[in-house]
Image (cartoon, rainbow, N blue to C red; front, top):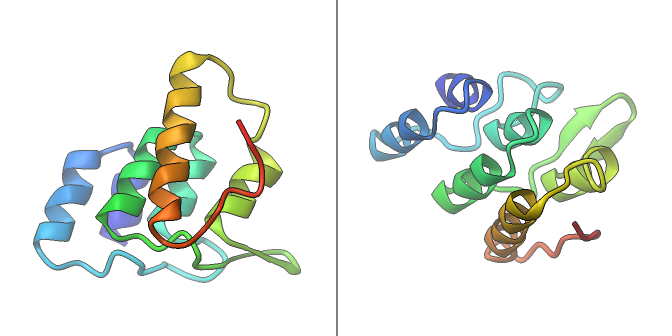
Length: 111
């Protein structure tokens, strides 16, 4: 999808333009590939993940990885928690956690 492509290339202005144009923010190319939010996390861009959640990408949507279905918070905790260090990354994590809370989703792990 165009939104997933914007996430892959860390292009927040394009994601914002797609939102304004009425794009489906939760569209996935396939259940295996996930939403734009999953791609932001795969690219280790927590700030983009937070922005996408604020734009309307639902972090509760599952992405199918093998035999396990993960939502965006579980994906972060399983694959990225503890690997991203530094004060800027921590600030991005905190912003992402706040954005996810707006969806009723509490981060199951910390920074």
